[in-house]
Length: 122
Image (cartoon, rainbow, N blue to C red):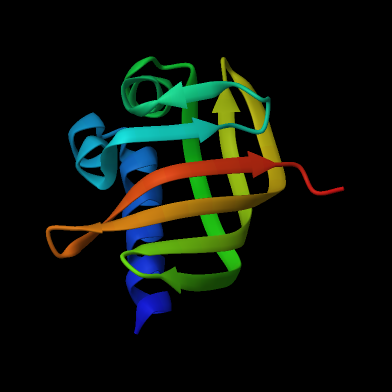
């Protein structure tokens, strides 16, 4: 089922963030990946991997997905969700709820995350 496949991709992304695994994260992202974080910062694939896994600026403790809704558009899937994040940014603890949109492309039989945006709910 599509929602299960996308949920598994999101779980793998969260796991890579928690473990700070740049290699695993890079394998989940499309080469032309683009992301806008909740602060409005635009990141490409290398920037996202660096920010979340290698720079040390962010350390995730947990990331939980709820209210997942997935829509299929050919070989693309668009997922909207609520993220319950717990992380540290430069030593400051953050526990926050975000709304997020992620776009996935089916590439060589697997779903790669190709674009996303996260924002604080109104």
